[in-house]
Image (cartoon, rainbow over all chains, first blue to last red; front, side):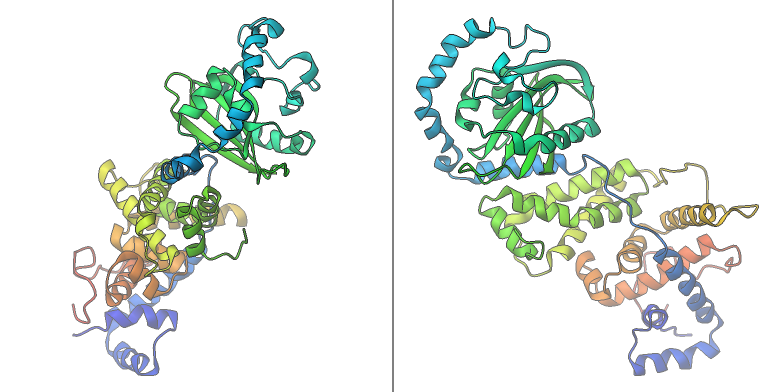
Length: 249
Length: 200
């Protein structure tokens, strides 16, 4: 017997034309197999429709976005990728001052202090990017802590909460600071430009791997408020990107 | 950036250097991609890997995306292929992450409504994984994600008739894996390679 197999799904779904439906209707009374299959197929449709969509776990698309940034960075013309360097040049004398004077001001202790922060003028709050409210150099916080995806997300959320109270920092000056952690994030291929403002740097572990966690404000630039927090996590051993989390402000 | 901005426009903006446009594209599609992968592989870890592989693959090929098919359709194709690759590499039968015991089971004695619904859902997911992969892909696209036959055919790059045939045969296989009173004999060729003919 010839069975109208290609029509049976449409018959169950009610999507057949009148002509096609007539073909199936003429076939079914004489074919117990197809009758049974139509009944089974109807039950399957009901069962599958009851399957609920599940939320996407944290961290799944972070590496994808990191790759997108790297790819976009490679595609950008060189002058665009390094246009922030113009600001760097303009700030060169300030950087020079920072390089020369910073060790004297801080006792050269960006990592020696265990949990070092920026100088006292910037340490206005206990635990957040708000500690960096000045124009001075950003210091790396060294934490004996193992972050996971959820922790990094939380870091971004916390930074987003306090973001409106933070003044804009000069991205070029920040990135030009003689800071190993910042250099590592830049070397990782993270796409940073004049719109990304480093507000917090942490040295800790991520899923057991020694890592730097850089918290950035991302926005339209030109003195406009940031729109998003981006946390780059890179291995401190080889500067490879471990994950990336973004949080809309 | 507008929520109703077309995928094609987001792609163009990303190719022009706007990374956030790709982020928007990912946010827009990640849920469907992840759930397709989850239903195909049956393991959360595999679904996460397949989702990443799919988006990374899409990223690599984005420059060559010509817009002949909708981005959604194209993304589903990339995701199904990522799942096939992953399942092939793993060379293992997919399992539900919630439970790793044997075949389909039904609650007994009767359970409260919510628990019963959860158990039924687990049974459906397990039954789905017992359906062969090419039938399963069609079932997920058409019956779980409500994709039109034509779009499923485009996503899977198979003829429309094959989609209809696989959909019907997949449904029958699923119902047989599920139902206590569906122990009817399998049709010859149900698990075989044949597709889409008006006769069998």
